[in-house]
Length: 387
Picture (cartoon, rainbow, N blue to C red):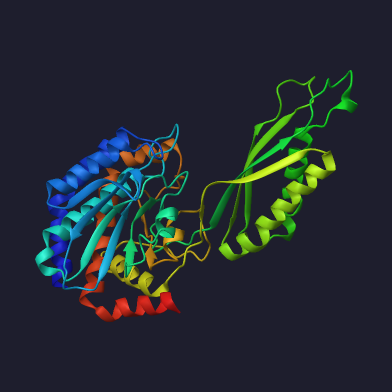
């Protein structure tokens, strides 16, 4: 426990700077893929304390990569992931400003004790979790393949040692018809809106046949320009989620494509369905590593809950199939305040965020310390991942 005790002291040492980082990011929110000042501020703080970090990583301008500890004599490779994008209108209603502060504080404490650590530890800035999901192309490109484990902490209204996520794919669905006067010569027209609406009804009608934990959600982006013109163009955006990437890829999305194509034939229109952003995979949930995080929570009196149900989606799911990945949640409040709301964003700006940032850093560094002080635990994680 020597390393863990020292890390705890270092977390206290650097906590004020981490709190200030959160407040700065929370009061100056930047949208997905626009986190230029946020990533700059994080990198500057890391460099200030001797962590060699550089902006622009893997071709993404707002990503970054930092070497917290470099030990060429060690074959243990760990990484801390960092999110810092905000939401339109509500700012940091998902708490990514505090999540970034947690990752940075954890890294600073580790750097402060590098003489005690026989491992290679990196910190990676992974922007645009809310829209495109930049961790997915990073994962597909092999960024995480060398790591024995990666971890980050997210805020919530309930603490959890790990999170189950739904796989997600988002699509733009567009129909093209033939315009005509809706009253004088409707027979000359073919309504693109009819094709889109029929597809939406099709999505609703298959719900009863979908597997549990499958979700369908969407909006109409374009439904025409005037009531007396048969719409030539209609467009919608739909997201499809499942707790199984295999089911999403192999069954649901092919069915969705059949519906769209069938509705185009039925309305004598043309259809196009195209994938938006990067797909998110479900979470490869590893019990062995989750148990270690539980033990940290218990030893530091952090109350937690365990959920068997997948909740929401995140691009860390894509990472979890390339290396062991962990995504605990830390409560910022015991009230039922929903994420992605202005009320949650206000909590992130408040002093309540400070205890959450401290607790989150305890989780990350406690997890890392226990892996390093008990090598058999890391072997268990790798064995479960490879099973």
